[in-house]
Amino acid sequence: MPKTADQSGDGVVRLDSHLHLWELGEGQYSWLSPASGPLYETFTVEQAKETLTAAGVQRAILVQADDTAADTVAMLDNAAAHDFIAGVVGWLPLEDPAAAQALLEKWLQHPKFCGVRTLIHDDPRPDVLEIPAVRESLSMLARAGLPFDVPNAFPRYLGQTAKLAADMPELTLVLDHLGKPPRSDGAAEMARWEQQLRAVAALPNTVAKVSGLHCDGVEYSAEALEQVWTVALDAFGPERLMFGGDWPVSLLGAGYTRTVEVMAALLEPLSTAEAADIWSATAVRVYSR
Image (cartoon, rainbow, N blue to C red; front, side):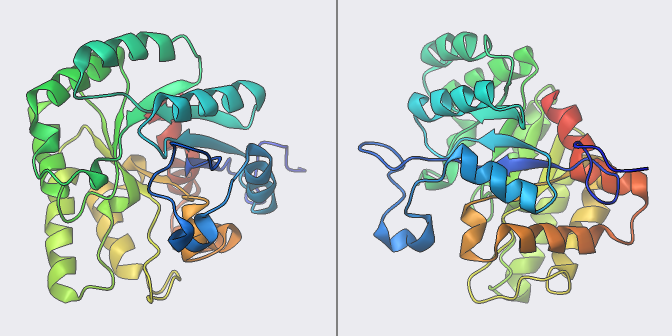
């Protein structure tokens, strides 16, 4: 049977749960600078579509890359205009519950708005996920049935993520990039990451993205990721893991096609149903896509 437009060569739909777009401009994406190398340029929806198609990926979820309403508006506009964009994980000002509520009501009018994230890894405070106003805003997400993405959680926020999941069982937490395992920092740090990751995974309201695993100066291959992958698969199981390409940030470590190839190699020993969970079904369930 010939494959359809919604299938990859193995017959499984591939949905990238973690894709970024941005347009360089005044007052946005302050974390970007000429020192960001290949990331310091505009990345458009047309480029994204071409990149995903070349790698056999059919759909994607856009994820915020700036703590501004403008970034979310741009993603929603692109999602409205392009069918391959399955959803948008946008931003809310979590420390201002009234403003967060007003924006949430606005965002929910868009059928592709499906989750919230903020760049907490840029916040120097060690307890940002425990601030009462933040907890109040996160409660709004839980009532709305929206998940909350936690980026780059290790080393500062992975422990907090487990506490948040325990304190708010009604909220689905999505751990981006497997919490950012410190693959270049030695065995002791990797052991600490594993312990904290397993504590997060022990809570049933958590899921994780196999994404953003590139590390400066460390090989990026299925073999090099074996330890990280084995821990993640054992801790979460396929039904709570999802593929994320993290384009264009992944360009710092590997091209998009290479990122997809490594994911496919990791999934090869799994059953078709297990691989389908990670390629798309988990993301479809979590983000209601």
